[in-house]
Amino acid sequence: MTVTIYHNPACGTSRNTLEMIRQSGEDPQVIEYLKDPPSRERLVELIDAMGVRPRDLLREKGTPYAELGLGDVSLSDDALLNAMMTHPILINRPIVVTDRGAALCRPSEKVLPLLANPVVTFTKEDGEVVGASGSAS
View 1 (cartoon, one colour):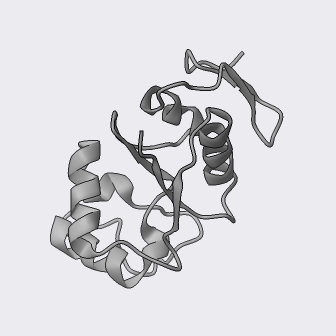
View 2 (spheres, rainbow, N blue to C red):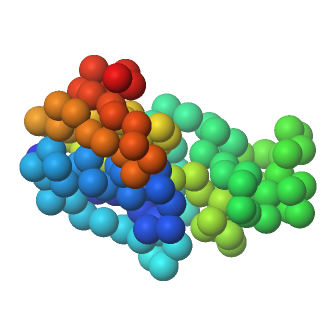
């Protein structure tokens, strides 16, 4: 199985997701998307694969979201994509792509259904224990 994670090492959710992937026996392709952002075409492919709209992928916290006026619901998908291309920090993370599909893995346990042999239990950095059922224990 091929596993790709669009990762931000400064993000706890992204670090937890990456570790769940590794503990599940996968050796993922790790793309630090702030250093190596996806092309516009690839971003559109990811959005389509996840079945979301560009607005659903926007990150507000710690980004220029407010300064850019991205809360304006009249902005087109094209305008939102342009903003994400100019400011990759606006792309929420982590995005994981496997043979089983693609998902924005927030919370991090959303990665488990995408894996062939998901880890049975996992302890996140904050001490929360999650299992392959996707629910916190």
